[in-house]
Image 1 (cartoon, helix red, strand yellow):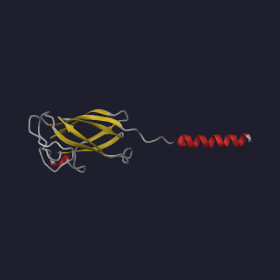
Image 2 (cartoon, one colour):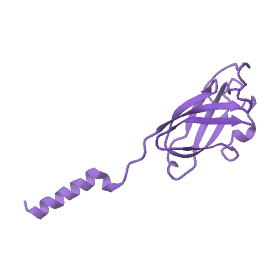
Image 3 (cartoon, one colour):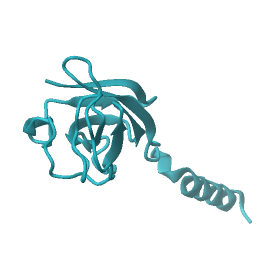
Image 4 (tube, one colour):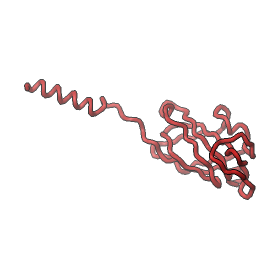
Amino acid sequence: MSRARSAALALAAGLLLGGCGKPGPPDPVEVAGRVEYGAGRPVTTAVVTFHPAGESNKRGALLSAVVKEGQFSGKCLPGPYKVTITPLAGGTVSPAGGSSPGGGTTPGKGGGSIPERFRSVTSTPWSVDVPPGGKKDIRLTLR
């Protein structure tokens, strides 16, 4: 085998194995935080959904995380998101100390005390930018 042919084969193999220099998609990162009412009382049960809002994460999946006693966590791709909140089916969203029957894990149409604007991606005031290292101090307040 000639030297030129060996070099060409090595170059071709390197390009195939190296992916032509394009980086792969980013790995999902941890996100976590708190959902509360304006007075600092935790939302006891609900679902928060992170909707991709940028080029960097538009092909990523939605993150839906259950809120329990005001806390949520999950994984998503880095990038900007619009965040919505929905009551859980079979239960109501209430401040800590209130009742919350049911406790299913499917978003429902029950109202609780979540203002309508927080339920729609087109009207929610909540935006979160998730950095490549994740974000564990997200604070979402219903006002």
